[in-house]
Amino acid sequence: MQEFDIEYFIENKYEQPVRKANFQLLVIPVSNPQQKVVDLKFYCSENKESHLSKNIFGFETITYYIAKPFSEFRFKLSAKIQKPEINPFHVSPLMPVDEFEYIHTPDFQIDNHLFLSSTPLTQMPALVNCSFPVYSGELQLFDYLLELKSYLHNLLEYSPESTDVNTPIEEVLKIRKGVCQDFAHVFISVCRQNKIPARYVSGYLNQGAGFTGASQLHAWVEALIPELGWVGFDATNNLLAYQHYIKIAHGTDYRDCSPIIGVLESTGNQKSIHSVTVTNQ
Image (cartoon, rainbow, N blue to C red; front, side, top):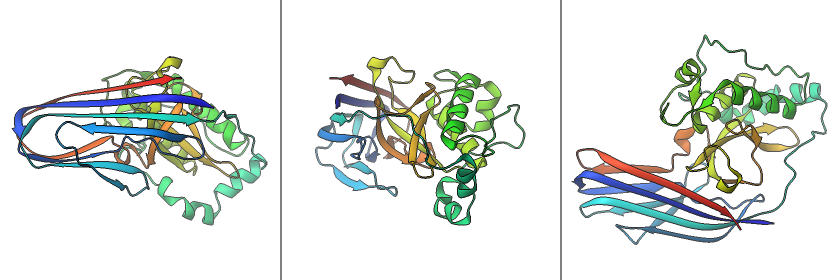
């Protein structure tokens, strides 16, 4: 069993006072068989009362309604997580050709249509100058996904500020640069083109392991493998998402997992600071 301490902090400063606002945060680590939340605290500078609810995918959100004027908004979350030791490598009991046939059955496609359908952020352009690996059933699906992970890791350069959360795949493939959400969106798009259900995952990454993208919230992908379930792949670091990965939520793309959504009555610009600290005890 490993234990991780997490601190997430956000500070927004506004040029003009905000008259009132509503903030929804999706930053609480999920408790599941792979991880357990054993301690959780959070604080908002402008309102001590929070409302907890679940989003459309069943993940817990924190909502604050602020009815008085303010110029700064600060939020801090602290959590302690326990994760059991796991073997990240998976061997399917199915033969490659059986896996291939199974994921192409109508029942499988219908059951998983949500994570097989393109979204604006995962839409692959008609013409791309890339030779993405094609899933043909010659390999185990797990092995194909490992190949795809490595291909994307070598194809794209991790480059902070080269893209933003609304950058389409077409632009990412044109400049061959991006951040973790871009790696994830391209991975998802290739999977869905090959009829493999794939979903976007947001979470925290242990900084002590020296991984790329660990200083902010991280993003990776879970793909559905018959008989094995959802398995995590991180093309940014060319790793399987296992011991050092702490999940918050999943969805069809980044927009389902945005850490903070705000509706404000205000004018002018704002400056934001986000920071993440993860330590392994």
